[in-house]
Image 1 (cartoon, rainbow, N blue to C red):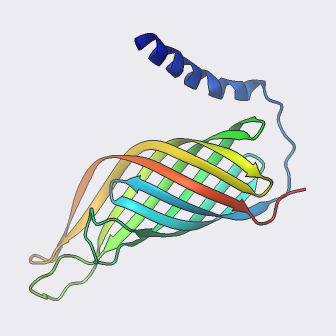
Image 2 (spheres, helix red, strand yellow):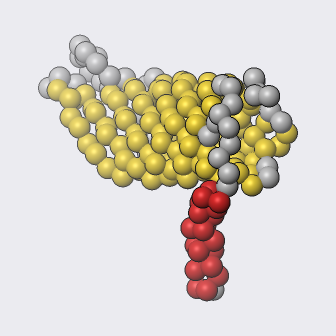
Length: 186
């Protein structure tokens, strides 16, 4: 069983090296699209719809994020923002792999059972470096996943003292997505 694990890890490490052997593609016009994703990270299960802009192997995305799990602070305004950059380095037929840098911001109302006057919200910043793979179902439609590691910075507002406290730690990211290219390049 251990030999299968080593072979699997070896193949996973060799996959990105294929990018060196691939010819550099010419720079194409910009194309843009939409992506719906569901992600699991430090703040729980989230969902988002992002706009995407791509030129050649570079892709950037930005959009709103909604936390749908009860793992953090339920019903306290679990909205956020997600931003990121992807570099698509290996293309083999309909399969593509990429490196992803991801930033997620979530903000919440602080827990305040005494209804004290409060200025500010709790915030959680998450940063991840990830590896992703996607499959082209048709010319405009892609299905994929991303797996990453990183950290978080949590800034909580202490209502009684009206001070902000910060906490740091490690975080993982698992994202499943469906991407639709609205304006494919020709």
